[in-house]
Length: 191
Image (cartoon, rainbow, N blue to C red; front, side):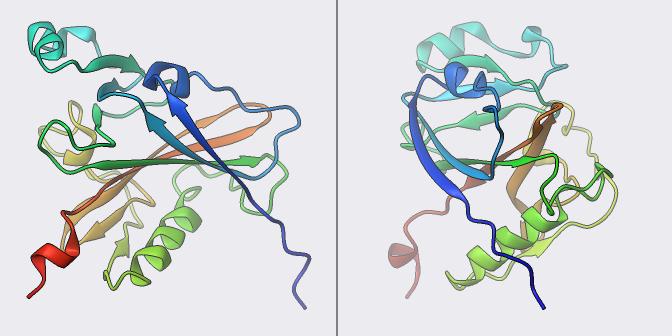
């Protein structure tokens, strides 16, 4: 017999990427999906990356904000509108409290459920994806760029990472930060 279903609240928030990254877990912490939409492109550095990896002149020229997140990993470019000419990005964070049935103490397995949820969502769009279940896959560029590596729970399509996941844990719960690179309009590319 299954237990009671725990619902998710869904919130859409728009604003500066720095402000969206600075959001703390609410008290009390409950399951939530935060759809976060930066008002302009932003390059988000991982918590341990140095600002020296960034070309300040290029950032100003392209009107890209520089932001630091509290979770680790390499840099991620957020461009919800696709104004920089690359794939648009979708930023979705999922929040769970420490006492949630989805909580897993093992950080290496704590995103398995989330990767599986992304795979199910992508399958409804006809996209065959898979969850990476294993150790952190590093490349020469992955300390610099998030999507050059592959972490536990992240999602791949045809061997390419399409969903990046980082997490921040506190005494209240966890905030799983997800970025998805959106393909060009599928109607325009299928024939």
